[in-house]
Length: 197
Image (cartoon, rainbow, N blue to C red; front, side, top):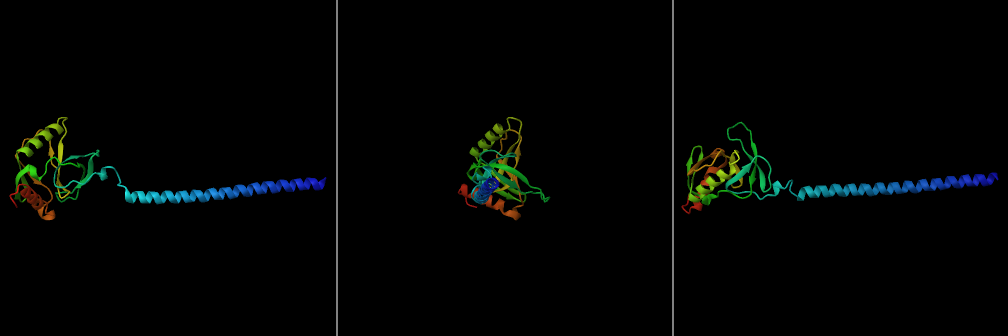
């Protein structure tokens, strides 16, 4: 009887040890699968960062030369851009710029260079567009910001506080000798008017 009890105890220990070994093996297997999944997730995250834009705002096509609606807050169809500081203090301003222009070089009848930047002369179509957009965008008492872009770089962002009827506009932005923007815009307006530079 003692041998039978001893056999039963040994078989019991063997069963418990076998079950514990099996469970230990399954736990190691699960741990290895979990490690593989974590590595796959890290790889996918790394590839996603390389392929996808950071935000939907950054996916908006980059604007080129013209006047574009600018907002201080992100919005659909707007791209984040930075306006360099023009007074020498180093402070910049982040604006969100529409992907479609309000005014393009063809909306101007000419341009005149000056030490501060460029005086742009609006043609009748450009004049009526600036009047309509300032009327519509300032109706709620907010300023209408227009980002002036040259070759996709913001050089100025004037604010209009009410309906504006103008024949010309002085663009004071980055010093012309710093970026060449005034000459580039002058050339584009002149070419659009087929008058040449």
